[in-house]
Length: 295
Image (tube, rainbow, N blue to C red):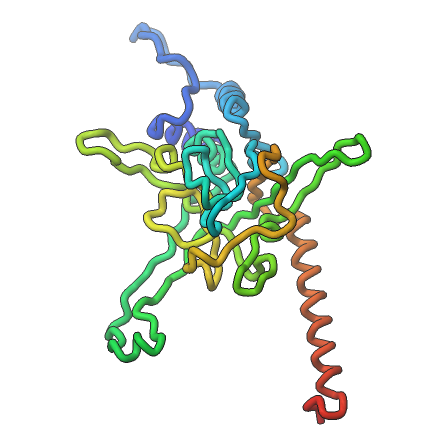
């Protein structure tokens, strides 16, 4: 029943967002004849076929959505992990030709539900001018809330005349300029985008189809994008760059959204924890040395 409910919800989303045309307009039916219920398998097959045309692959068993993209060559600090080709190319890592609303439909089929974007709330009472001059923040930033998702990127590189897959967590590709290391202690929340009216007297459209910005590395408003980073420094739009794991410009890649935490992320978490524990032991050992501050 849940699968049928998700499928029905998806069909409604596709129609209202004008994302997919599942079938030709229905022909007029004889009111005397009973209407035939849609075959869920046939509808699903048609949806998956439309996904394929957009370079999107849905794997219900693995709970992943894979979208074809290419590595970009940004000119400024990174604001977006992934954009459509009409998005902010000068501030993005990867670019896809897949239609944003169709990609969002695939993510909905994984069971993701839209969350809440970051909010900036004015402090009450507000700090004085003197306090602001000394560094006081007049705003309280409420981080995004919602369903978490994980992302990886994979691509083939020629090695000894054989194609070899490279695959990384997106966190290994994004550099935190504050630490000059790959970003840690972050997560990603699904927002789902929104409908908006861009021109007076025109109907609402799916905003990401117009703007092309899909996954942000910082807090962007309004929430026209599909997903966002959650991080203590995500308010800073100039804090992100890319690491040496970034593939070369124009490299075809597969950008993968995961509904459940993949093994690659679990392995990364263990690796980071081990490195942190080792660094702690070194600090303790250094503190125990003569003149090191130990007892």
